[in-house]
Image 1 (cartoon, rainbow, N blue to C red):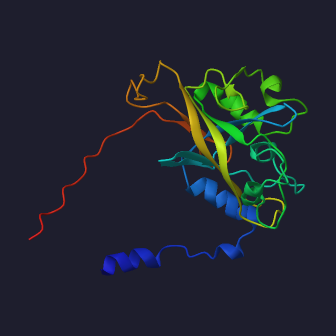
Image 2 (cartoon, helix red, strand yellow):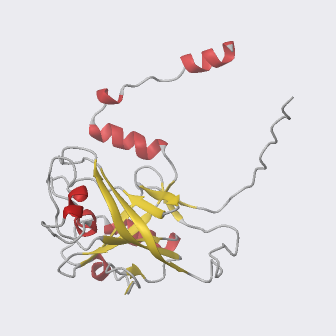
Image 3 (cartoon, helix red, strand yellow):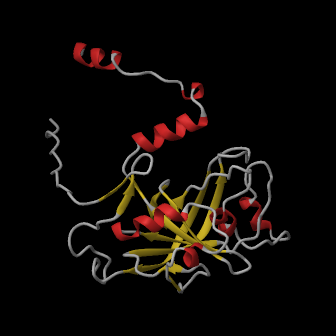
Length: 240
């Protein structure tokens, strides 16, 4: 017990409210690592495609099969393209649209109600790093990425991705008041899956035991899954 108390006494104790937003962000991305990258492709109601990387991204559940990604509000207070496009089409008379109105009553922006979560590998790293900038044209066009048609949603998928999950937007959660830098959560139900047979079999099982997916560390640092190891689960002692 004494050893545990000494270890705790040596820990830094920080109230997050004493940190600036930039400091909180840097702490998160440097401590919560590695983070899987979702290269999220969307399309606007006008048909303009977009693809952007999100390391605040992950699986949610298998039933229903769901994923999430977390775009922050832009520096100018406007929603990112990925967030606007993921909203369902603008239907003011539709009572079901109310759940997408978000905190603060900011209303529906009129997107296409879907996105595709593309998993990426090492050779996608430069495109992932560059896609976060503000481009005048679609990132697909600007970065020379090939878009492939999806089967069940309007948004395209990334051709050559080892895995791509077509998602219909289930819910959008506004975490703040919409000011610059506040977070949002986009939750999508997976309605179709694309897998590269080089990595997966017909049942969705990995062929080589591990997918060498690209992940994000702090700053501009990335890593790739390369050295997995297995640890057996310890058996609990028998109950008397």
